[in-house]
Image 1 (cartoon, rainbow over the protein chains, first blue to last red):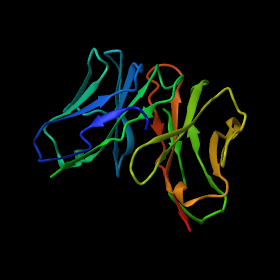
Image 2 (tube, chains in turn purple, blue):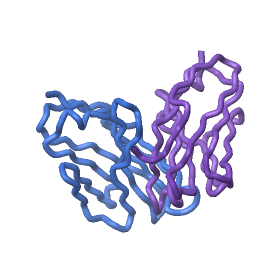
Image 3 (cartoon, helix red, strand yellow):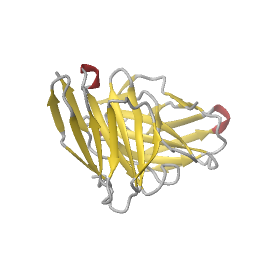
Length: 114
Length: 115
């Protein structure tokens, strides 16, 4: 158990809908990262937050957004969903940047868009 | 740009054999970090090791060992006396030491250990 929690574990929704994925980092970790794992793209970095502020963006679509709250939990919002958004979404946390402290991953949320 | 290549898409061996997973990386940074993660069939990503670019010493942890060679930009992972529980997808990853420090992953190697 990494100490990172993600809810829900599975999500099935229709095209055009909006969903919110939730992540609670390990106790004491200030950084939260979101990654998407799909068959065609592999594991890709989406966005990073550090202590409530956005730090870096990767290949995140404009239909996607995220935030980190004062209690350090984070939410990833996916809107106008398309079939291609079906993937496993991981949240990871680290005490600081991954360069000094490794990232620990949550169990993931499997999103299926039908 | 950073890139990680795991040329072996799938490897299948018989239990108790030794197996090496290859990882080659590209970066222009002089300081960086390398990682290995394991993704068992249950789907979670499990951290195995972090190595910084200054430290080229090989590391051994039980049946696992890692060989970092800066000269060839490789960070290979060997499992000795493999077991069925080692069956998983293994990912090599790279991060810069400064800035975003996001992980750049290879495509993964699916390792199957047959009894």
